Amino acid sequence: MTPVEFRIKFTGAFGFTPDLPRAAIVTTRPKWRVLDFAFQRGADNAYDMVVRIHPADLTPKSASLYELRAFRDNCLAMLAMTAAVPVVPLNQAAVTFPLGDGKFQVMSLGPGQMIAPMVPIPSLAALAVGSTAPDAVQAAAYFLWQALNADLPLYRFINLAVCAQIIANADSSAPKSAHPRCGNSACSFELEVCPECKKKWMIPTPLRDHLRGIITDEKTLTEFIAVRNAVFHGSLAALLGNQPVRLREINKPLLLVLRNVIGSKFGLQPMHADELPLPFPGVEIFDPTISIFYEMPGSKQHDIGTLPGELEMRLEEVARELQLSGLSVEQVRQEMHKAVDRLT
Image (cartoon, rainbow, N blue to C red):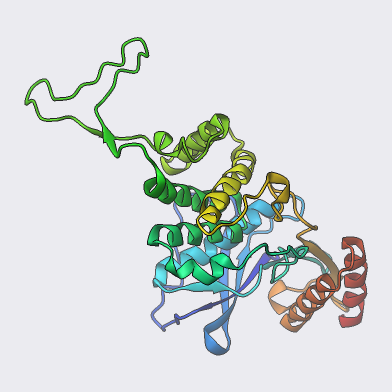
């Protein structure tokens, strides 16, 4: 059995000791069964990590880009959490699938750096005076930045939600708390004090009320609150199985509103939906994956652990060079096939 290899390069300030446990007990069967790990340490705390996965669980046809990226991020997050140190990815990761008879498919999850059309920056005002802005504005801009950098819709939404909360706390004109009010609009009775002890009774004002003057479109506000509650209160099932779709659809208008609110504090002109340069709500600028097919000459049964790492690293370099050259996706694929023939 030749396993699937999930290869991730990263930096992390941690090491391994002789007494590191070599086995782990899993009580719940995961969707992708991890068979083992391999680490190769380079200079400056750089690691090349290979996660080997049972080939019956993960195939080129069953591998969705969303799940592959989520698995990659989960691996890095678990390493960082375990050692309590920063773990910084150095590439987007690559997956090697055994196809049988000594044939393999390598799928890259994307280029190591962002490749997108150039966008003219309208002003340097925020860059010049950003460090003088109130702490809340700087914090909101930081989480907006993290949202823009995020690969997955869920991570982008979480960063946008935190950004929205910070802006609501700083800019809302609604009171921080209020008396409980009857939900019947014909009544609207306010309970000012506890009937028993007569202590003043106040509850925090809902986030919806704080954001009403910021997110002015009621439909967008309602959807944001619903998705936020589902994500932050552990009820993702409430998204009715459309989690990635609903997250993508709310991310675009939410990001637009938050960018314009923060930008207004530096005199930036508001952006419109058709001016957002990034691919929202989930349309990629180009095909983010490149699949490479190759056959190991002279053998029909090669364990994937014996494949030359130099080959994969060189293929990654070729892919990056081709993507930067401005070729079309089909041209990149054709050139990659030629590169595979040359290198093997």
